[in-house]
Amino acid sequence: MSPELKRRIQLVLVIAIGLAALRSGYILYQRHSEKLAEKAKHNVPLNADYYVTPKKLYPYDLKSARQLIQQPVWVKEGYRYTYYPYASGHLDLTHPAGLFLPIEKVQFKDVVLAPSPAAHEKLMVALFEKDHQTFGVQIGSVAGDNYQIYSDEQFYIQDPRELYKHWPSDVWDAIEQRQMKAGMSEMQANFAIGMGVPERSDDPATKTVSYPNGGNPLVVTYHDGRAAVIKPGHPQG
Image 1 (cartoon, helix red, strand yellow):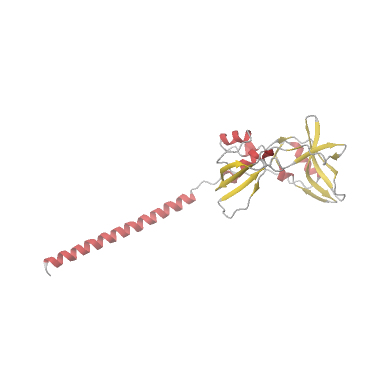
Image 2: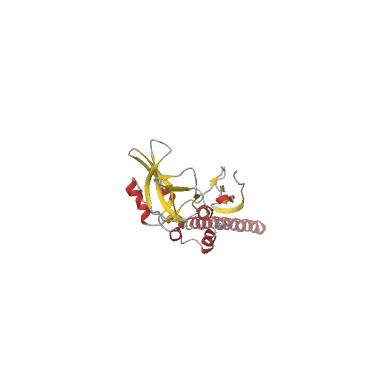
């Protein structure tokens, strides 16, 4: 074998070894990156809201529904539930008195049955006092022995500020002022500006919700569960 041929063979071997080393290094780097990505995926902190389980009363008749008067309650969806004047055993459904505000605190005085526009049933009404007047809000209905009670869906029986005390102070400040701010979750928005009506969307990462907001409508677009765009809505009229 000539010296020239020998040098060429050695050069080819060096290049092959170098390429093999680069390939091995790249494979190891890929595997390491995949492991880091997988580890990061599993280390993403869960939303602390998922661990909050508000207590419920599970009322099933008039007596059990009167558990509502044993402690204050807080409204779950502001600007959704209408209350009416109550007198002489009747709820005056022809004269709405107002809407409960977001997480408004209410102390009910009694839960009673009242006549309903539907002759075959009665209304279940929670009573409270405001400005020296008695008002009532419907929390269910009774037809014969069939009770339908939805107070657990209407009210918290624990202070939401304690249930969600892990929320940042600036979020709670905005909620107290009934203001919407970027970065809020839908639940935080609900506490701040009340009930919302979602629009249809084909993108699971994007959601747009319209909020009546007590006559000052807002439209909020959420990206990955957080408010990204907040703009005025159109008043309903």
